[in-house]
Image (tube, rainbow, N blue to C red):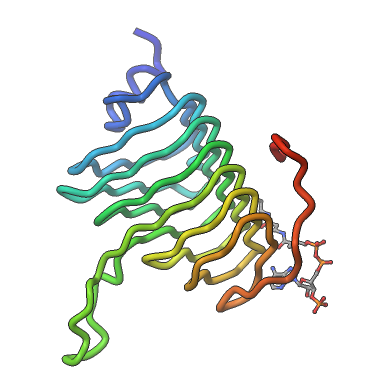
Length: 176
Ligand SMILES: CC(C)(COP(=O)(O)OP(=O)(O)OC[C@H]1O[C@@H](n2cnc3c(N)ncnc32)[C@H](O)[C@@H]1OP(=O)(O)O)[C@@H](O)C(=O)NCCC(=O)NCCS
């Protein structure tokens, strides 16, 4: 059996995937829920480990040609959907749960679905908060905190992230 297939299985990234992902360095997968991955998933787990957690009953769906850079944390407590050709920069966090209540008046849902569209580029050190949807082709500038939905074809940045400008995206264009 090929080493990458062994790693693929050991990491719990096996069921429902179309092809074995390319994993480099340390990639920890705590899989208690469902994970579905597309073709050509590539994850770099060095110099910082990547940690992916799917709790019981939760779902993580990753499209084709997705790249996850070092130090990224993804934690699905409800549902996280990552589209095709998404690039996730180093040390970015995508957690769909607040995990903790703010105060005793806080009775809201702790976990809310996150959806990241196709061809989205998320820069380094970003935080994508529960409930957020990011539209196709958009770019999240480095060190941004995304706490509200982002429409398609825009550059957003800052904490909280605001629209910086509209992007010019030709039909079918995928960023390299
Ligand atoms: C957004 C980015 C791509 C630059 O895009 P750009 O179109 O060249 O933007 P500019 O540098 O012209 O800046 C445009 C505006 O956005 C602001 N801006 C740029 N980067 C920003 C950031 N990370 N956070 C907040 N605002 C930012 C600029 O201050 C400027 O604002 P102003 O018009 O008020 O002066 C770049 O700053 C960035 O964040 N790159 C991510 C790099 C990264 O994380 N790489 C990791 C590997 S994936």
